[in-house]
Amino acid sequence: MSRAFVKEDIDIPERIKRRRTASGLPPDALNYMTEAGAKRLRQRVAELRKSGVDEAEIFDLESMLDSATVVKHPLLQESVVFGAHVTLRSAAGELKSCRIVGVDEVHLEPENVSWITAVGKALLGARMGQRVSLEPPTPAQWTVVKIE
Figure (cartoon, rainbow, N blue to C red):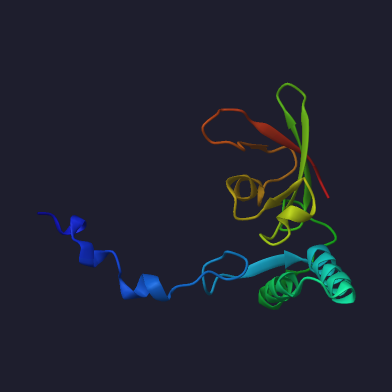
């Protein structure tokens, strides 16, 4: 019988001890966050403290903020960087916008995209006029038309 199917291999001690952070990132992974995202989360904590209702949410938000590495957005950029707002155009002329942010701020705006997703990774480093593939299974290409 193959060792792959032996039950004792399931509960490896190293796997049991590893815990995810509040952000869902593996331990020791940097939790990048934009300045705007950190500010919004701090405002949410302040609102919750005033209402005094949800201590669990306050704890979660404070844990996220404590683990965050806030990244200052450069004023001028020639390529897509963390925190950038990117406008793309499809071959059919359809426009799509997104902003590259940290995992804890994706839910703050509908166009936010985490830097660790396939879309985020495809866009990081892209330059004006460059074509990028947002969904690898399809050959659809999008052209970067604006970086803010």
